[in-house]
Image 1 (tube, rainbow, N blue to C red):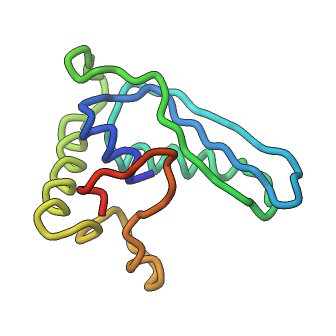
Image 2: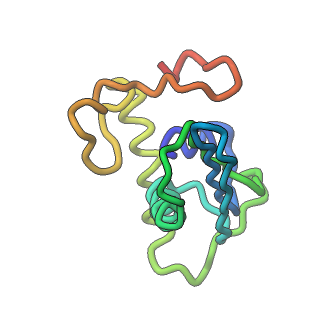
Length: 136
């Protein structure tokens, strides 16, 4: 989720929906759910929405898991939410983390604590495209 949100900001977009899809081993089919919200590119907000969706996932061993950011809005057409109490402050945090990671290396700082075996993972997951240099 954090990488998808980082790509959203790099492309200078906001999104209005988040989708999660899973497929299971032994070809047991798939599962899809999504949530909508006021347009954002805030990683913390998207992680919280993903956590709510994740609570509804059937508890079967997955073969693959994916997140999709939908209803993209170019930054030039972004309409801030005037009624959100701390939107401006939160919107500044994710780009700041992007800058720190750009300067000191990917995963130098992130959202929350990672287990020790996850810290070494630099995000080389398949995304149906050739990764850009900054992603390593």
